[in-house]
Amino acid sequence: MNDVAVSAGSIGSTSRTSLRKVLGGALIVAGTGIGAGMFSLPVVSSGMWFSVSIVVLVLAWFCCYSSALYLLEVNLHYKEGASFDTLAGKTIGKSGRLINGASVAFVCYILTYAYISGGSSIISHSMESLAGIAVESHLASLIFAAGLSIFVIIGPKAVDRITTAMVAGMVITFLSFTGGLVGNAQHETLFPVLPMSESLPFVMTALPFMMVSFGFHNCVPSLVKYMGGKESRPLRNAILFGSLLALVIYVLWQISIMGNLSREAFGGVLASGGNIGALIRALEQSGISVHLSSALQLFSQLAVATSFVGVSLGLFDYLADLFGFSDDMPGRLKTSALTFIPPTLLGVFIPDGFITAIGFAGLGATIFCVIGPVMMVRQTRRQGLSGSSFRVSGGNARLWLVLGFGVVVMLLEVLNMLKLLPVFTG
Image 1 (spheres, rainbow, N blue to C red):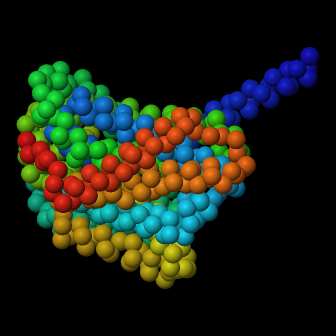
Image 2 (cartoon, rainbow, N blue to C red; image 1 turned 60 degrees about the horizontal axis):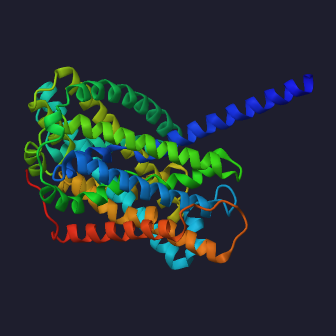
Image 3 (tube, helix red, strand yellow; image 1 turned 90 degrees about the vertical axis):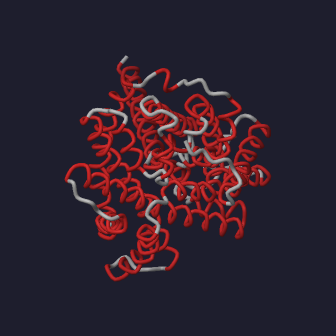
């Protein structure tokens, strides 16, 4: 009886440990995907509006979730800790590894600029609305980039501490203003009489932004290392629950904004480049309370700051490894110059490029988040590696769906860059 009790206790303890790891892994996935990019979602969805945007979000979620599973399938054939770069090199060769690495660097640079642009617009708006002080966009860009880059230069411990504090603040402020905005959402504002022929053309412009919102794939190798072992089920659950959590938060966000701001009201936001400060200003003009406005401003500041620190740290480490810079202060200063000077200069001279930059990021992110994992898993299956028995369900039909999704997203973003797609102006 005692042996049975001990055995049952061990099973229960193991189960609880596994559950904690799945929960922790899911939060890593959600935290990697959710960021300041969510502020672009209602802006780029304003043409197609709420109902169609939710359908497109679900499609983007499924394809990105599937491509993450393909990356997991590849990862489980190799030892724990194998990096994204290593997996690309072992499956799609030197040229594939080079393209993959270049796309990662490009996305990190362009997102760092996007967050500087978004952060500067929030600083300008907050200083004007709270203190009556007008801060020029180029100066706000310098303040934002210089203030936060210090934590990255100091090192990971400083980043960990500031990020933990900011994430806690994000959770509190998100729950605070979302509850109020969802409660205030108007049914007729969310579901206006809008012919499909008028909304569907704008899907083409929005799709790359939707894909970027689920770009958590760079954390999959880290997830395998964090959760340990070759058992695929806990890892699959972490990816599923984490990506679903991101989807739920995005739906709540769409309801919060689109339920309080009419489709026509987005004209002014779009005319200002779709930046975060312009979106907050439009919501304030719609009549939301001072409390909700303050919570929204604080959340936006924390979200942009957290995203900036996370992305720039990844870029910092990537450049340090690429150029072989040392980890002492002179080496870190060299790396920080390469990391922060180019996107900060862009922020100073092109301050209202938040939406445009997120779109550019979609072009690069499609390579390593969607197309790359599909190509890797096809090569792994051809090689017949025996490191793992896990195989993503759905066969070739699912594989080709995800690959087709990635190709379409890339083509749409190229067409958007060439100004060949319909543009909603409000």
